[in-house]
Image (cartoon, rainbow, N blue to C red; front, side, top):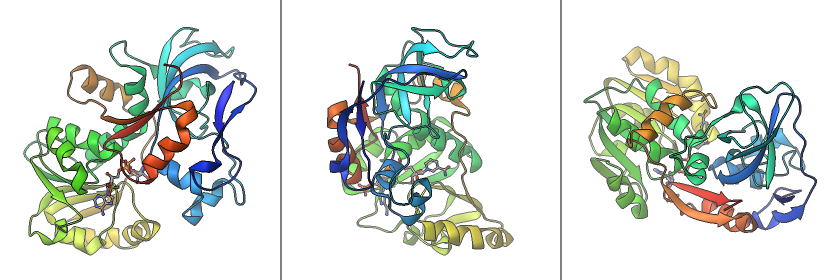
Length: 319
Ligand SMILES: NC(=O)c1ccc[n+]([C@@H]2O[C@H](COP(=O)([O-])OP(=O)(O)OC[C@H]3O[C@@H](n4cnc5c(N)ncnc54)[C@H](OP(=O)(O)O)[C@@H]3O)[C@@H](O)[C@H]2O)c1
């Protein structure tokens, strides 16, 4: 089978299309013929090996040679202990611990997969698993409620574009923060207000929020706390190691002020039934910007790394 393989850390140019053996599923696994895979911002870090903590997954060379964790496809074969799927079923899921999605076939633990609704395309299904779940779990950790003022930092990106739609569904007044070229997409997803971070610092506008959901965590914990209402909540989903450490150390102290500041530790594939329901009711739709073929995985990674994507970037393996 064909796969987009890399043997070293580096730029997208280290990824090459190779012919490799088709994998065989173990007893608890499913062999999936991959139709589509979506990219997450973490792929850039796993590709380049930066920041340094990524080297826990391979000090000098990456252990994971084939990136791609959010996959959608058709079951080709099942291991002898798998009862919930059979060949021909359409499935999708987050193979976070396995990777291997940038290939014509991938083996996945059956428990990491769920049935793809017929109304969902393979591209849409691939765009959903990680991004939609961190958005949903982040909003729920922040105890989102009707009528709240919610700020989403990084609202034009993969996960942020889901979070805006979900926050509107929950009845919040939403402010989206992102770069200039993403203002329109945030508005079209339902954001009531938008802030261009290249021109304005949302922590200095004087506005206060019940919930800040932060996908990029660039501002200090103190600046974010200043932007919360008295019993407001700040949920850090992604950001630099320095910001994570600052929040781990100082977050518990901030609770003295009545404001809660915490970090989301997302659970892969949890609450997917809820996301499927929101999709089928037309409340949440994946926003797909870049579309690439398996051969074009280096271009897809470059597009991701340059931060150009509005919403999700998807690789279609089997059209
Ligand atoms: N906590 C967990 O358990 C967990 C699990 C999975 C993923 N994550 C994290 O969740 C995050 C999800 O990100 P994603 O996939 O949605 O990334 P993404 O698609 O790259 O989106 C990030 C967005 O933030 C924007 N941005 C960059 N700098 C900004 C700033 N200073 N202020 C406001 N917006 C800014 C980017 O726009 P420009 O590039 O145009 O500037 C981009 O639109 C990642 O950090 C990932 O590591 C966390």
